[in-house]
Image (cartoon, rainbow, N blue to C red):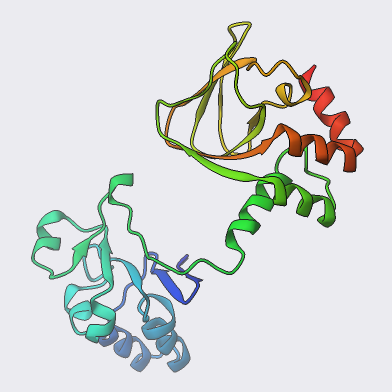
Length: 248
């Protein structure tokens, strides 16, 4: 069974061929022998494994089970320049004229694309919906929260706040990265995507942090100042109940 796919975003595209043999010469022979219909052959030649894309990830193991390099080399240059090969030895890849996909996050292939309109607002709303504080908010309530949020970045190793020290009282939601959170009791936990902290501090007035939070990686945070939280509490009483429960 073939499990290829095509993904598109903002006019850019990625195609993954799956374990497909692209060889027009062999497909012609299969059609002549009645094994493939003309429609199926046309699909295998164009709609499945090989098609125009900004990145075409194609499996190219050992022929004849997999696609021979000669078949890929015969493609139009507009397709050929975006081909990256999978499941091929370094020796074969070196002589193929095509780049080979390398394992590891450091070899991630990125396709630049213009973000969709309102992409950041949509992502923030998705994060809010994933937290128990804001999950059941209606559209009007979510818009109020969105208007109060301030995105902020922290580099790996940065102290976001330190227990006992004076500082701004903020409700913080992790947008990306990992945060080490150490409470006054000494208990330590790791916070990640959609986790939040500071809900107890925004209810107090002494201006001192109740925990130490350290960026374990580069961190993107969504922050709401105490005054804005108080504004939200006045307009949305259910949020007060949830924060009080969480802060206990």
